[in-house]
Length: 85
Image: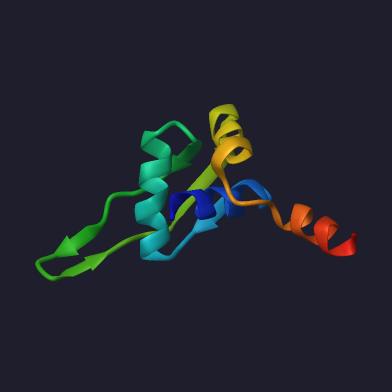
């Protein structure tokens, strides 16, 4: 789900590299929605031999952070604080 990827990116140091094809597809959705600033290269290759180069995320936008606050999964830090209680 793109919101889980957005949470992982928000908890990561920037710039972050995304290498998994499924994550890159979700990253395209997040980028189109304005939740991240990223460089997502187009796949390249011939016929059935397509290759996807890694994408680079430079920033989770203010809109992306707002979406996480309202609709996203909790951060890892928040989960650890809940366990300590």
